[in-house]
Image 1: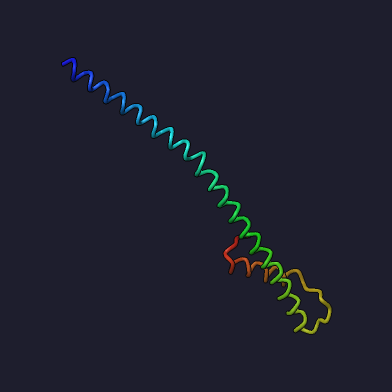
Image 2: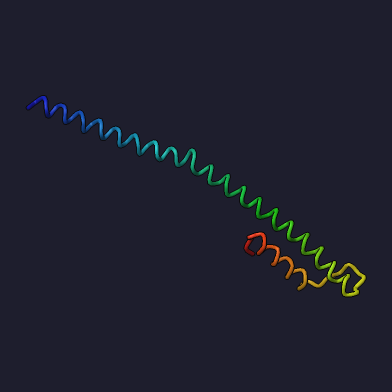
Length: 98
């Protein structure tokens, strides 16, 4: 009987140690691997969005200027509402929300 209790005590201790080790490794993985990768992904996405917004800005300016030229306005001014319309259209097409 003494031997069975001793084996059972050892098995319980090993199980508790293994469980604690799994929890500790999971927490370490979260802080060392997961969070830095998440931040890196977020920065990459923000950079892509900024590039798309910059592209849409230039595209909208060019389209608004071209529209003014086709309706007979020789100056390089364009109405803000025309620009905003083109800019928002481009953002929708690029999949970027305002």
